[in-house]
Length: 354
Image (cartoon, rainbow, N blue to C red; front, side):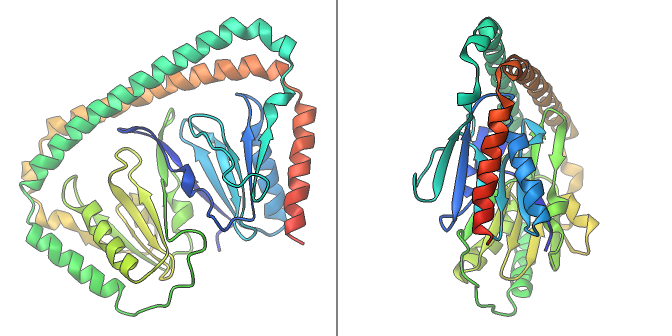
């Protein structure tokens, strides 16, 4: 099994900030620590430190990265223990579902020096306002890109032989489900939704390679926009659902209504349109064989890509403002207190490992 899988449970998308945080850890969890606090308060560092220790103890992890700062993590899951730690601050706000039972709130804002922070008040308010404006521009560009994307879909669909595509779908269904397998149980989720990649201030960040490691069969679905890739994967999901299989469903991180990848855990199979699939042994299904590529309107593609670039630029502006917030808070935080809190959380987690 892979030691660390990396993914996202939030995304900067054409639908705004898109949260999948209900999928971080299942109802069968042993413990979920929800961190509240402030920018620069050490939440990501706390989770990484605990993750490093649990790796040394021999456990496997999921690191859930922040789409607006991929070097930071929003949550970590220790798989074998069914324990998670999550950043519960906006935009991915989360509160305990079962307080006192499985879910525990950790308020790191108690370590802010109230007197010290007051001298940064004006700068914090200004950075917050600028941050809000940058995100508004970001999502305006993304939403404009979706309008162009829809035009591309409509144009391309008129030039696809869907009879041929449907035959490919039926053939793939027969091949994947040739042998019935008894599901091993739902492990907290029958269908778990997430992103393998994200639109970030650094551009497009993709961790699909960490997810594909250890998958025995990979089907790579090649095709232009509108040729039916997401529809094909959706049909496979329907068949897997009928059979009661456990699935991980990876949405398109720009247009989350679309499906990019599917892992059927009971079969250890992945069906993906993510080009990272080409880096592993795979079978290719080429839907462009049924598409008249001469019908492509390149101008629409160029406009779409330009709008995505502009959205990414505004994400960079948002991160700069977040950096200003962090620089305001860092001098006011008692990191000794935060480290002691981290050690107490680690001690509690290790008690479940005995």
